[in-house]
Amino acid sequence: MTKNVLSVKDMVVMFDEFVALDHVSVDVATGESFGIVGESGSGKSTLLRAVAGLNTFSAGALSINGQSYSGRSRSKDFYRTVQMVFQDPYGSLHPRQTVDRLLLEPLAIHGFDNVDQRIMRALDEVGLGSGFRFRYSHQLSGGQRQRVAIARALILEPKVLLLDEPTSALDASIQAEILNLLEQARKDRGLTFVMVSHDLGVISHMCERLAVMKGGKVIETVKADALERRDFSADYTRQLLTASEGFRRV
Amino acid sequence: MSDRLLTVEDLRVSFPTRTGEVQAVRGVSFTLGRERLGIVGESGSGKSQTGRAIMGLTPKHAKITAKTLNFAGRDLLAISDRERREIRGKRIAMVLQDPKYSLNPVSTIGRQIIETLKTHERISTAEAKARTLAMLEAVQIRDPERVFSLYPHEVSGGMGQRVMIAMMLICGPELLIADEPTSALDVTVQLEVLGILDKLVAERGMGLIFVSHDLRLVSSFCDRVLVMYAGRVVEELPSADLSKAQHPYTQGLLNCLPTIGSDRHPLPVLDRKKEWAL
Image 1: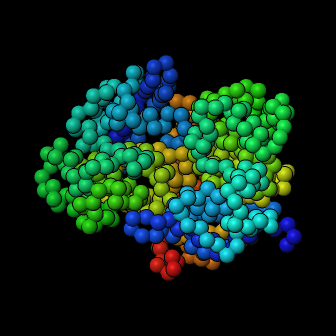
Image 2: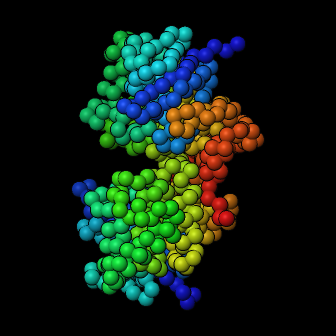
Image 3: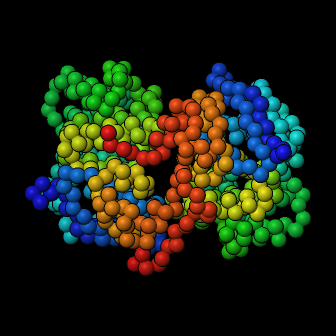
């Protein structure tokens, strides 16, 4: 039996009167790669942010690695277990810190030793090399920045990685490189992924199971290979699938 | 070909910067009739600057040269700014990427569309309004009267892009340049907007230049595709023959996309060769 590393039960997130997440329940097994798809406003990013403690949730339960967490507060231990990579590589790196400084900060917070080696290793792992260590983020391309963001998440040796549209700001060829990098990291470290994307192609490539979200609710949870066989029930999933196949003249 | 609309020969666009001249477009040539042409490339390939140079929207400090840049018998590089303005919006129109930034936020949708119409035609306000409402209906906006008096921030992205298309088509242009018209929209809305665009272009017999980074989308939408890399056209081919692409860059772009039902781990990545950029 595989244990669930992440379990969300009946989570509700409200922004004033607006219900962004409406009783959402999701279970992710250890070592699994779990995808979330949906259109903008469906609550997919809100779910990730609520798990990471960036949004509060007003009802429901969250448990990670057997430990339960409440609305907002997260312990240091939590961030050793769970790390997040954001969509926009331009906005998620501090513009006035060098790559070295960016990677040092999480290590310092969590009191790691051998920082020098760890930074070098993290950069190597994401394919950047030591030449990038003392550069600023504006000197890097979009793909390189996303690599730094991934290095920053992996440097704490987390067990769960939350990925919020990690490649949607990148060119198709760069996207392939980043996806390969993420897969390799997952294989090497036995990570669990929770990945949000609007691109069904990306999700079905990366994930074994996926949840389809709309209007703050999980409509359906299917296996990725079921998509191929058209083995799902919700009409909305079919719409998304048709949309991902491209334009067809009627 | 008698109904050749646009001839571009050896188009070059360069920008002077502190570190020297950056050549964004380096010798692009193509001709366009009343057909759909797709221009595909990654960021920095010069695809948008090609479209902008034709529209005349390149910043003043940039340098544009071309052996020929001919639209319906007129040399676009030789004509005055005034003549350019007469063509822009009336005979060549452009749909931009994000309706959030390309519509005027402090003017109602109706007023903006009427403004386009009145700039190019001498008609009464009542007639302009009637034509605007008809156009909004043509882009499948259900309640044109209501949308007419809304401000751009009050409509959704998909609706905004329809408004943009309506505004661009109201003067009946012969050539439409669409620069990533659906990249800012949700996948489900994308198809709707493309469907509308497709129908109107076919009905009105316009020429269309569709600029996008999405090779698959472009090939399903256009008759012919130009693939650009580092400011040059590396390959030109009919959309139907996309699978027979010769250039390694085109092949690489096609291959690196993850698709449903293909099990390729790891994904093939693009191995950029220096000689492509020569």
